[in-house]
Image (tube, rainbow, N blue to C red; front, side, top):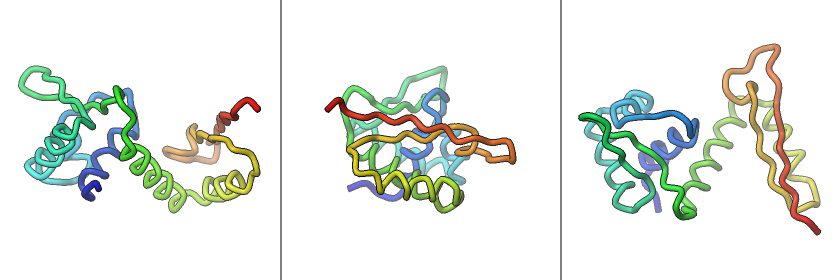
Length: 131
């Protein structure tokens, strides 16, 4: 079972897979002391859930996609819950999708999911198994 701080770090890393973040960057995003974040990240590295890539005197923190980690799913579900609490439109869409009788995956993305404005849209990608 993950500790709360470990889930927080995974949520930050899942937020933008293209972003290069150091331990200091993650500590700043989480508004934590460096030492606290450092220990959390090294615990995740010990369990092989993240990879540390040296770059100068710093280390980039990356998710380890060489294996499926259920903790990534847990962190992503928490991100979904957080988003639904902040954005009622997405919460309504989520509830409607959950009522579908089909076995499918729906990925929600777009400007509405980050910093919504009047002109924001919601993009949906459905993955439906071949029957």
